[in-house]
Every structure is written in C-alpha cells, then in structure tokens.
Image 1 (tube, helix red, strand yellow):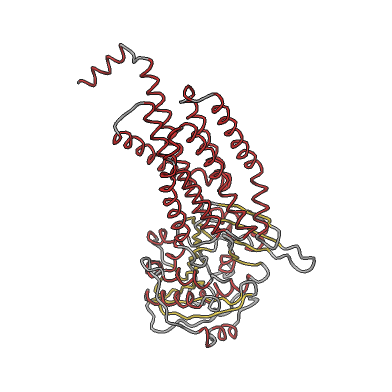
Image 2 (cartoon, rainbow, N blue to C red):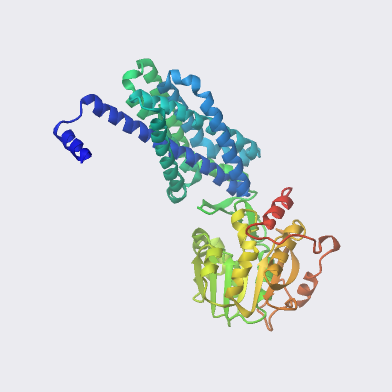
Length: 532
C-alpha cells in the first residue's frame, strides 16, 4: 500500500531535477557495466574457441585461457587502486585499450599461429593483458557509482555484480548464437571491440562530462576516435588479412574457406601442370582427404562393412559425401542415412563443384537422407535398425570428438544395429598413434563387439587403420568383400588378407578403453600426435 502511495505521489509531484539526473546517470553507468561485462566474456570465449580450432585440445585451451585471465583479473583489481584518484579518465583509458586489444586479439593470435608459430605464448600474453584490463574495471566502476550516489558498500557491490553477471550471461549467449554465425571469429571480435569502446569511453565521459576537464575530455575523445578508426579499418581489411594468414598455412591455393560454429573448413587445389589437380579438404587444419588417393581410404572404410546385408545403411560423419558415394554403388542398397553435425559441410558437398564432382552428387541421390545433428544425441533417439554402419568421424583430438569414441557411444550404437549388422570405424594411424588405435579397438570390444583390425596405406595420410566390428559375436568378423562387388581401384581379397597383419612394433599393446568419464583416447591422441 505504501509503495502505491509513493508512486502516486511521484506521479503528482515529479522528482526534483537532481534526483532525475542521479537516476539517469546510475542507469547509464550500470548499462556501461552490463555492456563491458558482455564484451569481456566474449573476448574470453573467442580466445578459447580460436584455440580449439587451431590447436585442438579444447579442454587445455579453455583451462589456460580461463586460469590466466582470472589470475590477471585479480592482479588488475589490485593495480587499479592508485587509479581511483582520477576514476573517470582511468576507466575511459582502460576501456579504450581493452577495446583495441580485445577487438584485435583474434587477428593477433591468428597471425601468431600462421606466420610465427608462436600461438601458445601469444595466447598467454593476450589473455594476461585482457585479464588485467578487465580486472581493473570493477574498482573503478565502483568508485564511479559511489560518486553518482553514495550508498552502503554491500548495496553497491550487489548492484554492480548483479548487472555484471547478467551482462556476462548475455555476452556468453550472443557469442555462439549471433556473433559467430553472423560475423565470424575475426570480425565478431572487432564488432565487440567497437561496442566496448563506445560503452566504456563515450558513455562514461558523457555521464561525468561536468567533472571532466576540457583537455582530458578532448584527449579521451581523440583516443576513442583512434581506437574506433583502427577497429573499423581492420574490419574492412579483415577478409584480406584472414585469407593471407590462412593461405600461409597451406601449401596449395585455397579455393574455399569458411568458419562455421563447429569448425574451420578449408579446401585447397594444387596447380600442377601435369596430371589431375589435387583437391584437399581440411577441417580445423587437419587433412581429411586428397582427391589423388581418397579412393583407397573410402573403399577400405565402406566395402568390407557391406559384405553382408546392406539394405539399410547408416553413415555417421563423412559430410563430404565420399563414403556415401561408395555405399550407393550397390544397387541393392535401398536407404542410406547420413548423420553429419555441420550443415555447412553437407551444403558444401552438395553445391561446391569440386566436392560434388568427387562424390558424384551422392547427397542428392533419392536413396540418401541427410540429417544434421550431433551423432551421440541422435543415436539416443534413433528407432531404426541398420544392416551396416560406417563411422567416419575425425580423430578424437578434442573432448567433443572423444565422446564419439567411447564405450557409451558404442553401447548406444548397438541399439541401432541389426543383430546381423556390421560396423566399420575409422580409427586413426596404427603407425603414428598406435596407443590411440588400439584404445579405439579395445573400447569397441569393451562395449560387447567382436572386432577385426586392419591397416592400409594412403600416400597423403601414411599408414591408416580401421576396426570392423559385429555385436554379440564369439568370433571376429571376417574381413572380406561382397560377392560380385562394384569394380574397385584398390581393394581385393588379397589386399584385405594382407591388411590384417601388423608389424611387430605396431601390434596390440596394453591400453585403456575410453569412456565418457575417462576419455583415454583423448589422452593418447594428444600425446602421440604432438610431434607430427
């Protein structure tokens, strides 16, 4: 009742001008807190995402960035104490520098990776500097808030951190849902830098314009103009800079590149004057295939798994459509479901002519159904039974991929596999990563499958391995081709027989199976591929 009377009194007798000004100033300052918090979290997410794309090992990247930034924020808060004597100028300078470094952070790290091969040291330095500047914000903002209207420390802290955490929430959601798909990583960081500069400099200078000297105000506005000019110029040149840095990482000319919310996709083509051009697909910098010899890999991946029944086939991964091409060569295949996480990859396989020529337009075949979904989640809801399953995921060099090589994943797969069905899993290189390879085989066995392991040679990859598995079987499945298979360029029965023989130094070793709670395969792959 009393609040209602107060509201009516306020409507009848408006607040004095000083009160209205105070409320308006507090609102603008808290808005600046909100925007700065959102920008700070976006910088953090951008650094972790970039590291995951370029280096892999998302757990390590996230841990390093967060640890360094949180430590630096504490140091920055302490270092900001002397700056509270002139909080308006100090905060505006801090935000201007943060906007410039944060906005350019992705470009600087990309350049360090492409040209200098100093990504990790550069990431630590950038994370440290950004963390120091973010940490300096709160003490200065608290001082500014108290200048507008003095209040108890606990109340001021509650107001400040409530708005700060809400801003972090909005920034955390905007990065994957809006900034990354709309602008990409490089331009997205630049856009956030502009928002940071406007919120941190212009808003604060406007609020305290009467308390800021003319010279200081002119200097701050000139500084923010320089920052906005630098960010704007970089935004205009961003595409050329990105192409130049990216091309430096690949031996052959890039004919297509894009960064999706899931991965970095690059297609290159050689400029050889003799022979067929070599078209290569890279995901997050890792080679997926070369058009010169991909048939060796895809024939080995597909045809032994289709030696039995094959009316209804499931392909998981393989968004390039090359495994699908091999499956569709069998006329008695009635339906193929292709489950690929990234819709950009399947769109590229459908519409980008160099890939479409390689996969023979397989994704538009009426027998093919393309589903863009997370394979683990999709399997939990799958109701069909499949005669054969082809698993063509990238190597498990991140936590998100390691779950697709876990006992739990193969348990789920068993529900979608017909009793007579066969599964083929690409399993990495027994030569370069033997522990990884045999861990995948042991993981499949732990899930209740009988397995047959074999290896082939793909010149662009080197030695590569696969695991053929059958559920609830007492004997390993025979490695063979179907009667009267399509004409193959690489495989025959003699090649398959020889493929099951591993040299002494690459035979089965004592390794752990991989589970969701103990992703052993991630540990092995990161250790073994470190020097390659």
